[in-house]
Length: 204
Image 1 (cartoon, rainbow, N blue to C red):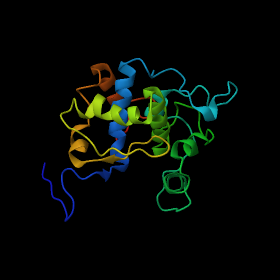
Image 2: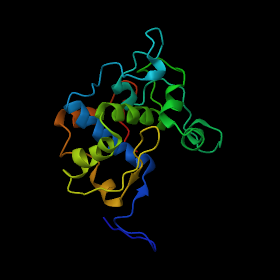
Image 3: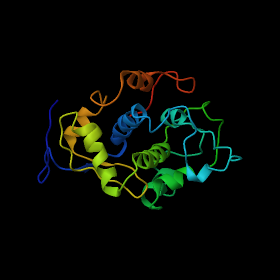
Image 4: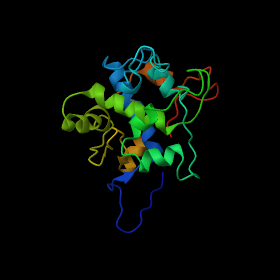
């Protein structure tokens, strides 16, 4: 793989990874599933739909990973007031914005690419890690980056818990997270689903 950097940037420059960071979030979820702190098929604990009568209450981590949650979310970058642009730049709470969306389809039935669901997952990841803010920021380094042979110091988290800032070499190495994620989880993430028969869990 060839690399080329502009003036003032290099291999260790922390840059906003945007959707490439979905691979990192995916791998970190795998670590927490392996540790028993998250479960793929249990309802995900989300404050916005914690009430038992809420139609979103039974949504699972697997459905969110498959982007088949059924939540209404428009991934359109042409509308400055659309869901994805407003979530990222207009709210200050990406996960909360996405989690407040109503259902637009039955969960598990329809695939729809959504950065909103990834932000919901990232906030759940933050809660599962527990501890202090410092513990949360150390978790990706301990659980993923160091086992992959990279001393990542550039991760940045937004208010909603999303990890966006990565140095280029980390983005090269985190496609599988083999050092930290079980083989069964890697198989699951690549397996097609009824809602998305041609793709596994989106990584970008």
